[in-house]
Image (cartoon, rainbow, N blue to C red; front, side, top):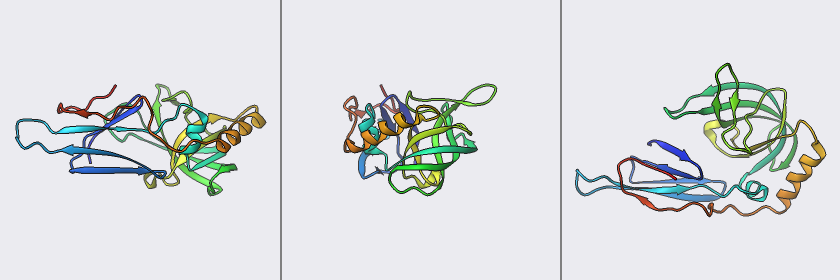
Length: 197
């Protein structure tokens, strides 16, 4: 398929096919690789914008499953490309399904950065790496490559549980329909190397 490079709120995709369509959670974003008619000039790569995630309501609208979970164990860490970071696979038990109808036990993947000496660090402020023995509210989107889904956000729920669940129930009640991040610009990139902001 190609190389995916994520920087801030924009993803640029280099595809080997003429067109690739990414569909998640009922919303679609498109990217194309426009073949050059001359061998010496590069093809144009169009940017791929991600959904907005600034507010709890944005996150709640995008995630198909939101649940209070207890992390049972880390299953594996996958390095899927030469870029820094990879995928942390975790087994979680659903303590309270806040949105959707998840199974009692889920296997989920999430982006994580390993640190020297063991453990993982967050890649975004509201994206805590799932650690065994802890509780989180997670929002997930379906993705068969990661069994029961991809973790879109994870916030701690070890303390203040009534306030944490009330926060996410309120966000679900006022969720925003998935929409592209306003900071994204879907503009063509004409160099041979994909770039992002």
